[in-house]
Length: 404
Image 1: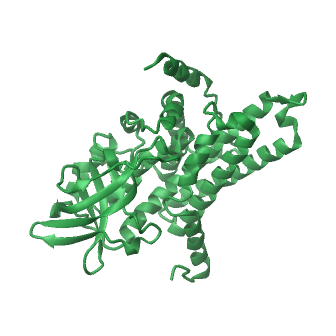
Image 2 (image 1 turned 60 degrees about the horizontal axis):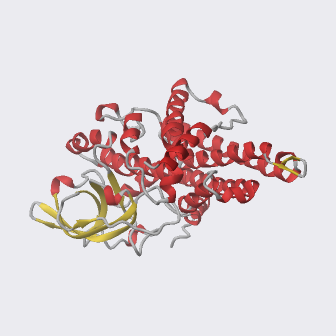
Image 3 (image 1 turned 120 degrees about the vertical axis):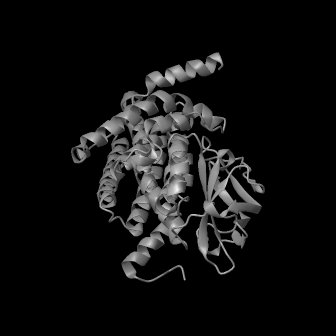
């Protein structure tokens, strides 16, 4: 490590003064376990993520060493049962973990979110007992890394039009097709791949690294989520043993239920990014002097900050209520869509306003807003775009399907 990088990391470690806003005393709604989990992850982010994330993002390199640390922290599949090496926590704890990880960086949260919600969750919910025992403990510790293949080069918001296909051949299934914009795929040991047969029936498969015809080229040139590794999944006559099919689900309800789990985490995660931007802007507004007084003393700056904390508070309450419903098994996909859409849009607007308060300094990597802003542009459209989630809410309240 170069001297300049070492000095930069040391400086950031000392200057992460983040203090989370809690304008409505929402901490009183949390249990002691929730608060302990949050403290552990928040401290880890300050020690291990904040000091390095700007450099990794600038170089468009994924901090792969964080995977095992997140496993040790219990951040991978935290709400899955302890019998499989997971945390056995409730859904609010899971949300809090995503919030704190995304306070550090959306890419870091994506690493954990994909591993837990899109790889471990479908194996747990739809897999055989043998599959659970084989994969979940290793995924929980990041001994192996997974990815999730649903989106295709020509089919994103409309997964029912997927062209990735499978056919039965003896003791195996043969997969052909391609998936696009797959977090973790270039480094993944396994992939949960969704494909359909000639009858249009969608099934899920556990595809393992080393299977002939399975490749995962990396996607380069991203201006967003630069500290997260993204790639494709290419399947050319890949022979997958029959024991690797997920036996307990057929149809799109399989992958869509996984996406609901991930979207739930995003609805919490985005709050973390928003809080980081607000905290930086509030502190800067008190320190930066213009026209003989702090920026925070100007009415327009106070307007920005007051609107930021209002929107963060509304998002916190939305996420908390969604978490209580999730703990009871009552959170609907449409409710999750509402929270994901609202909270990500809120965070993006706060990142932009916080950047303005910082003026020219806001575009430098001394402050987190520009990185969060670029990241959130992607979060706005992945796991269901901003507009698609609006239509999901519209369909839910009217009973009329705008997708047909």
